[in-house]
Amino acid sequence: MKQIVKILAVALVMVLSTQNSVAQSLSQDQERPETIAKAQTEKLTEALNLDGTQSRAVFRALVSKEVSYKKQLAGKDIKEPTVAASKKKIDEDLSGSMKKILNDEQYKKWLALKN
Image (tube, rainbow, N blue to C red; front, top):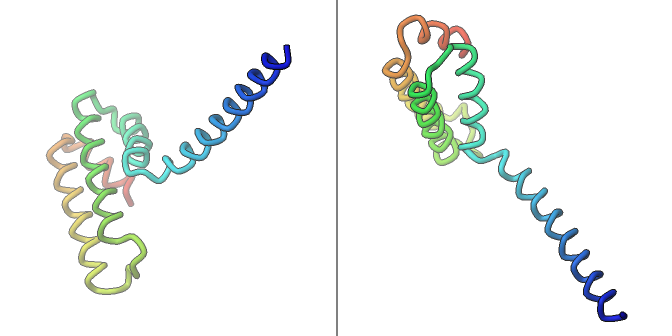
């Protein structure tokens, strides 16, 4: 009987500790480029009435932008000329990708939403 109680207590402790570690990883996932891009894609899909193919392409373009931001801009002063130039280049690449993905009406709406 004592061994059963010990086993149940150990199992309970393991379950509770697993839930805690899952909660920590979920909060860390909010900073991942894929998570950020997914949230932005969902908003744009609704606002611009994107079809499935466009949504996937927009997602890939936004992930690329977020990864570039993290690699080239994270922790740097945006007022520094080289950093500002990098940001401008990344933004221009995104605009070019979006122009290819979206039709003219959607692209104009995206520009309005962006500003």
